[in-house]
Length: 475
Image (cartoon, rainbow, N blue to C red; front, side):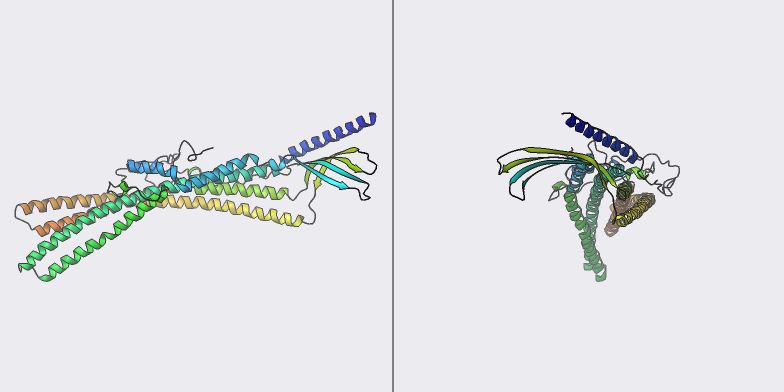
């Protein structure tokens, strides 16, 4: 009994010493992780193309499409965020990353293996049944613990940014397609009016030709103008069909809603002007956030490769029992063996390969930092271009609006002169065509400004901020 107790005490002392060693090495490991590179994005202090006197406060991009004043568009955006298949895919990837993130350090926790085996004595005098348990615990030294955290967090961040990026693109694309659909419908309406006016003009010219008051060439010119007007109708009809079908895809359905094909009012910013120029690109633009996640991932992988250059240290223990299940002497006995001690894995002949891998990961980290800076520069460039386009198109829309109003006034005066017998009905048709062409230019100017508005807020990372970050099925 005394010998057994002494052995148990020795085993206990060894275990305590091993645990103390493990705790000390674990504390040492916490100080060895490499610092993250400092990201200094080249963001301008002020926007070059922003209106003068505009301060750059924090971006508030929630519901930016509502500035177009179209309730139907607001409903489409809500439906798209709920039913779009790309959003559903990104949400599932985020759920997958969230399920894995809490287990980033599981490989550094103690593990246990159990096994059984039949062993026959070589002299066939006995047969043994063996039961064994092995356990191992590798210490996350030299920054391995923190590096694993970085890699896992980067994967989670990338999945979160992926969902947000899909939402940004989805809202922008739905808004863009809706603007194109409604604008094409207005263009089709105006071109139909031009065609009708050309038909009436051809009838009047043909009457004059029949009365020998005009040469036949004038009727031919009128007929050619009518044919051109009819041919022009094909383009907006194609745009209507394509935009409606693309909207159906964005909403996750096979066919467009019938009410989409009914002519409706064109979305318009109206008197809206840029009152703030958000400069918080690092927090709102998905491309920049994804580049930042890639830097974190590359830093984590660099730390893991550096940790592989050093010995892997841990504690191992095993316990085995052997039972004599068959003996020529018909005797049955059993024995148990227990062992515990440190486990050291030292890289020798492949150490050069591990060093090369660490150097390669260092270069990948530098590349990720450069990619981050490039993403910021690209975001700044897109925002500057969109701001400049938006300001220029505002002037174009105002000029087109004034031109259309002037021609409407002239058409009204022309009709009044015709009623008084002082003008020709042919002049009325010409003024109608000219006025409707001016309205066509106005429709195009409104659509161009609306699309520039969409491009601006997409460049700034504009996206909805729903109460639930993921669509239905949120964990």
